[in-house]
Length: 174
Image (cartoon, rainbow, N blue to C red):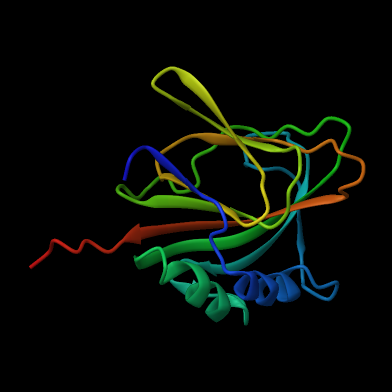
């Protein structure tokens, strides 16, 4: 894989509808997080953990596994969660690396909706901004510091992404 990859229309329309009917449902459980990282004082957000520390944590994990992790050729799932950010007047989130103590992992961000938010990271001294586009998947090296520039569009009350961290299956192993 090159440093990063963008796949538009990652899910079929039917897969997207199945996923969004579950995750974007008004009864879906979200949990409050005061800031993005323990060291920061960012804008708060909501999250839902599907998988962490070698354990499925949500009844929805199987859906995520079938729609994403199998397609991404994941051998080991490290963590998987959905993040929901709200439209705040100033919406900035600190740069962070999702998983610091594992090398060779991959991070993927899936966008549920189109907003004016950006996922940002630096590569070779250049800042790269990736637009939040519905049904887009961004894949990049897991040791990459990345951050969010939150959305400001008043017509979009929220932005929802799926954040996956995993180790890809190495097909070259004998």
